[in-house]
Amino acid sequence: YQVPNWSSGWFRVSDQGQLEVTPAPGLHAPLRAIVDEIVDRGESLPVILRFPQVVAGRVRHLNEAFRKAIGEYGYSGHYQGVFPIKVNQRRAVVESVAAAGYEYMHGLEAGSKAELALCLAQKLHPDALLCCNGFKDDGFIKLALWGRSLGKNVVITIEKFSELDRILRQAKVLGVRPAIGVRFKLHARGSGQWEESGGDAAKFGLNAYELLRVVERLREENMLDTLVMLHTHIGSQITDIRRVKVAVREATQTYAGLIAAGAQMKYLNVGGGLGVDYDGSKTTFYASMNYTIDEYAADIVYTVQEVCKARAVPEPVILSESGRALTAHHAVLVMPVVDVTGPTRDIEEVPPPTEESHQIVRDLADILENITARNYREMYNDAAGDKQTLHNLFDLGYVTLDDRARGEALFHAILRKIAKLVQNEKYVPDELEDLQQVLADKYICNFSLFQSLPDNWAIGALFPIVPLDRLDEYPARQATLVDITCDSDGKIEKFIDLRDVKATLPVHEVGKEPYYLGAFLVGAYQDVLGSAHNLFGKVSEAHVFVRPGGKFTIDLFVRGQKARRMIESMGYEEPMLRDSIEDQVDAARRAGTLTPAQEYELLEDYGEELLGYTYLEYEDAGMEDI
Ligand code: PLP
Image (cartoon, rainbow, N blue to C red; front, side, top):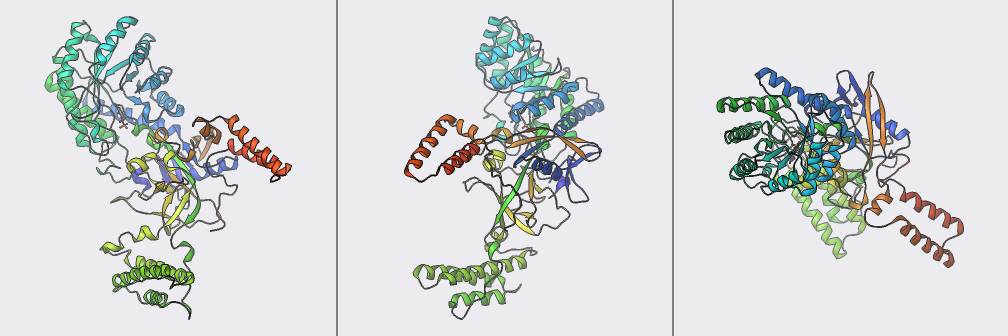
């Protein structure tokens, strides 16, 4: 499962085969024990485990990395990050960032009016920055200006030229002097999924001509001193550090150019982009990155300094808007496996052909017996042909249902035998490439992909998925995962691998004991982008604090959304639903299809479900039947 490769030290496998969270040196707690406590309390799964200590650790790591680089290079400015709350606006997350970031003057970034309203109410260091990005109307600008009156270090970033006049107008109306940033469209591009965020065709930002017009316009207004920040952003999850260096060089040249044009700049904001190594491969593959946080900080500080020296301009305060890297690690989605299906699962005992069996069934039995490492390809082709014929004959009425059942079971047994023969082969014939996936079990997990891992569905993002325990036991089965939505897209068929992407996940046989899978690194964007497909709502959350001695406390448990909330979000009202059911119950009573006792029970059950969790709720999470 590559835990040491992707966990960046925040998770580990214990000698007892338990997956543990390790939020600080000497602190560790097994995730299975945390989930068991949640279940013992009578709460239902799935659940998101949040570790605020991990958020705090990430904030410290980023800031310390910049401090170290600044110290080493003798850089005269400092670093001051801002957390873009769009990455995760959850209270637990924002407050953890704000608290851990206080000593580093770490601020926040808002991309909308609602986000700004939230940010303004946070307790930040008085010098921490509050950056306002995104398209802005007068209301947004006013709120930002009022923020300055409250003594907050609010900077309004211009994303398009017309915003400047809006800002100047509102500043005059309110009598508040703004602090202005400009977002510049670098010609440098990112790498990975979001490389379109940069470059000339980027959605946001000004080009060089517009940048100079901003300077001129502000000079005309005698307000050039309000232009304090240059902002750039070449996309999230930059996988290649060389792209960061190229972009920062261009940004610093632009910064120096603005100073040359007369602006008194102070802040250079290099935007987001700091990656997360989701697959542990440390490559430029989209789920990975070829650098560390320390290298990221060192390369930015070095590049800014180098350009500033060459251009003889003062070294700016460096900002980054890292969000993914601060929050991804802190959240784990725990999903119970509630059932297992698979093409061959229930027919591992192959019934032999009988005297009455059709010839084609006996042919398949012969193939099964005679497959060898030398002839498996030929045998596969024969078997595939026979299966096709079996189905054709069935359609025409020449093959019985019993023959069909035996024939299909034999065919799957043939596939299993071939899969064993080819598993260690370097070259696998084209027609057999998908064999592992075809034969894999489907582990049905109690969660919604659309609510909890939307990026996996939307853009094929990979998240490490690992059983929470039994990691000292060989996972003998291969599975793909399916969720409980009625949508065939609700499945996971790509898993992390050091060299490639795997089509199946190694898993343990599931028996009486509950079996839990954790999806890791889900703390960035997933909480926010999730959607209510099939009315599966927000998942319950446990905020877990790890204590010395392998102990932990669940400091806060927030129950997931109830069915009623989900239904109401679609425009219905609870009394309306209840009235309708009561009317129908009355009619059923009159028609004699409901006894008074059943009537009472039906209404009770209906009411209970309205208040219930939207996910499957089993009293016994184990699977005795399979
Ligand atoms: N800043 C801006 C302007 C962004 O658009 C984004 C996200 O794309 C971020 C910051 C966050 O970047 P990241 O996801 O790399 O942390």
